[in-house]
Image (cartoon, rainbow, N blue to C red):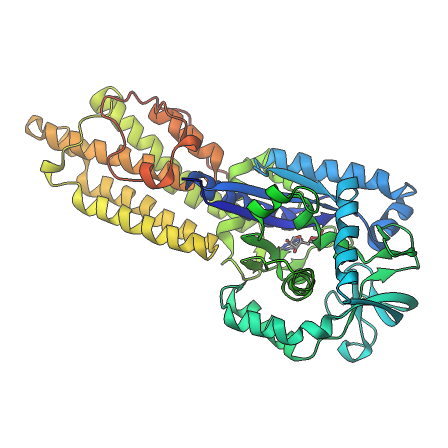
Length: 511
Ligand code: ME8
């Protein structure tokens, strides 16, 4: 039987600057999904990359006095390097300046054009370059300032090709209404519905006033609007337009992950382009919230942009991965504060998880020379714990379908807390003092070690390094990542006789 496929994407990030924790957040979230699906037996294609054309990148390059391609080369290397450092397991990294992508963007434009959905006209309205977004006067809340980012817009008047977005108003409404899980979370879905019901105007999809873009196939005075160019990446990366077999295997995407800032492009424009071209729509668009830092918007001018490298060098990759996905309820906005970071590192990671592993393996060392004893259900010390673990795993699997990362971690910590409580209740140190209770002590120590094994599996998508360290300490020979989630999370998988090796603390406390 062939494996189910799972195609997950992040936005492709602009190369006007280096990545920060906001970019890291989306990419880690996508990585968690990709890792979980691989472990669950799916054939995963996990895509990320960089968005390299457009006025914003052209201006950033000009202000640095370098050609846009040179800036794009340098910055895309920064993104790649950060993803390596963060253990991001992407299967492909797309760049919109790749020749193959440029041809794909032209092919999609040509298709929409031949469909009769692109026509020539004149654009006269306002443009926000930082957002690469067109606005009309009636959309302004503050005169001439971008309703999305608040920065001043500029008046544009140029010949332009338009996409008949208005034609797709009804089909889009119908589709989103009929598919309640298409846009998550629900609050974001409602925003999109409201926007569409407000009326869709045709969308300018070409520019003439600057050069840094993909030439329009039917008119080389024009370049393709950066968003039409960028969105096409989700098709290019899986073979469009040449490799039909690969493309048909993976399209439609299972999940596009992004933040609320670019939801409209993904949930309105992109589905409309796809409908026009006759492609199936992505199965799910998941929009998360926005990170601030110490209560303020992250910005260069405020000098508060959090550099992920600094955090990783100081506290480790897994601490950052954990904090970002645990700190905010996925979908809500979040705040990155040093105090909150250290708080979680000490409480959740050093205390709850780290101590669980180190004290358990220390006891196993002391009572059984580190060798995993026999599981012994007859001792009556297993049932409740086993049931709790099973129920948690059931809830975790369901939460993955909603991409509800913060709740998944909470649920894993229900198991961590249960393991710690079990140790207190069973008090192995007391059992060890009574020779008649050696069998019970053995059963208890088996159970504790078994829960730790399951916890390692559960945290692996979030904290692959920590999971691997626990796995090594448990002395398990089979590679964690080549196991199957559903099989190895079953209670009783740990073999008695396995020789554990206690290691250094997983997360030293930070003062
Ligand atoms: O929009 N909080 O690129 P971009 C949370 N090139 N997420 C954040 C964030 C923050 N403060 N800052 C950035 C573009 N992100 C286009 C996308 S896709 C076809 C083209 C993350 O570099 C979040 O995922 O501005 C957001 O949607 C994305 O970076 C915007 O990245």
